[in-house]
Image (cartoon, rainbow, N blue to C red; front, top):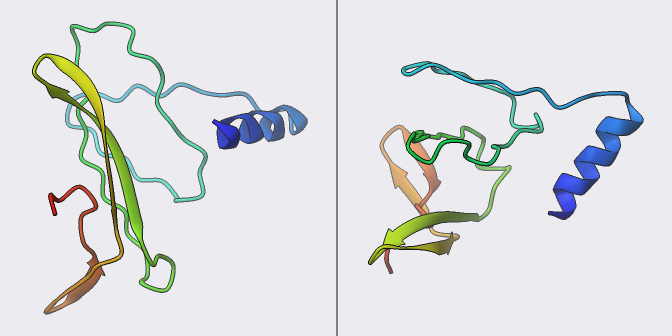
Length: 103
């Protein structure tokens, strides 16, 4: 929440306004990791907003990963959180393990 307020102040100081972007089914979009971005409240609960997110970076930039997501358990929405600093290496690639794995 602090970062959101910080971003809003900076945008106001620079005369910038938030812009909404609605993609169509099947669209793919890429943006720089430094771009301030985020979702908005769901207007229509009957519609879903599913996505697949991938972050690319160098190993020098990140030493750990954290993640949060809302999951439905027994009809109730709960927040699931995870953290990892475990590095996974495979031929042709190296990165941090999934923070959402059950340990």
